Length: 66
Image 1 (cartoon, rainbow, N blue to C red):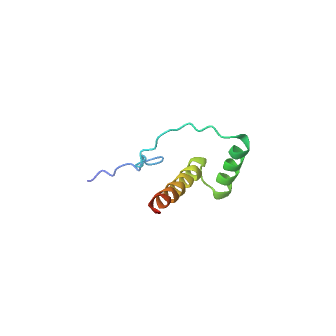
Image 2 (image 1 turned 180 degrees about the vertical axis):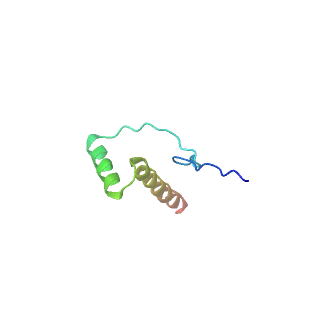
Image 3 (image 1 turned 90 degrees about the vertical axis):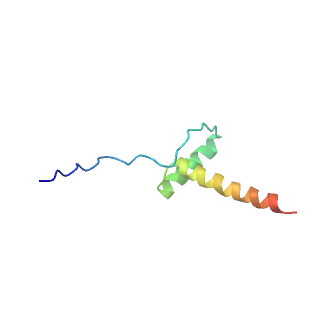
């Protein structure tokens, strides 16, 4: 007779090694971020991370220009 493993309960462990960073925002931008994240159905950190990735790509292209 084989013993079945019990199903894992909860969210699986993260694999992306997240880091906590404190960012101070003006109130107006904070409200926009809160609303944008709610409209997109994701957390505020995801919106900020995507914005920083896009900024990094634009900066990389700007450095390559002669």
